[in-house]
Image (cartoon, rainbow, N blue to C red; front, side, top):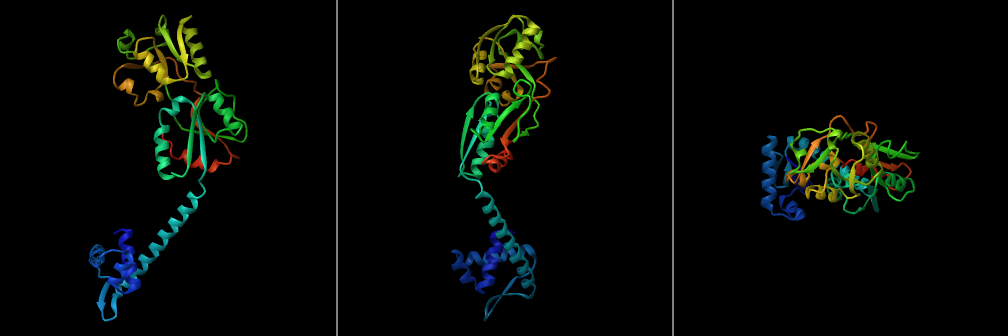
Length: 299
C-alpha cells in the first residue's frame, strides 16, 4: 500500500467513477482499475462495487476509505509543514573552516544539504581556527568549523555557541613509503629526531612543533604551509615527514595508494581539551539555517 494507491481510491470515491478518476489523474482507466484491484488484494476486502449509480464504496469499504482520507489529510499537513519550514531557509550561508575539516566530512555534508536545499547559496572559505573565530564574532561568516583548544582560544564570548562534533582524533606521523620509519607500527616523538619536517602553518601546529622540539631538540623544518595537500605530496616525494590528525587522513588517496605511510604516534596525544566543532552566533541572521546545516554533518 502506498500514497499513490490511496489517492486513486480517494479520486474514485469522490467521482463515483473510474473513468472520471482516470481523466482527473491523467492515466488510463485500466491503470485505475488495476490500482484499486491491487489495493483490495493487499487489505483483503473489496472497497468498491459497480452499480447503476457508478462505482460506489462497499459497506466495509466506506469504513476503510474514511481512514484512508484521514491519512491523506495528514500527508497534506506534513507537506504544508515541510513547505513552511523550508521557506524559512533562504539566502546565503557563509562557512569559515579550517582546512582539515573542509577536506574531510564537509564535502559530503554539503552535497546532502544542497540536495535538500538547492535554493541556498553556500560559500566556503578556509583559514586557521583563530581567524575563523574572529569571522564569527564580527559576523563575517555564519558558521565556523574549528578545532577548539588552548592554542586557539581560552573560551568563546557570548553570544557564540559551540556545537561539538564528538570526535577525538589522534596524531599520526606520515612518512614516505621508502622511509625506514615506515617499518614501524608505532612511533614516539623521540623517534623523529634527525628527520626533516614539512609542517602545517597554524597556531595549533606551532604548539605541536614546540612539543617536538622539546622531545627531539632542534629540528629541521623545510617549510610550513596551510595546504594539507602540499604537505602530503611533499612527504610522498621524500622531502620530509609530517604529522597530521587521523581525521585528515581518513579515506586519503595518498595513504590508500601507499605513497605515504601513516603511523600512530604514541606517548603523545592531541590536546585533551581540544575538540572539533562548529561555532555560530546565537543572534546571527542565519542561526536557524546554521543549526539545520549542522544536522547534516557526520564525523
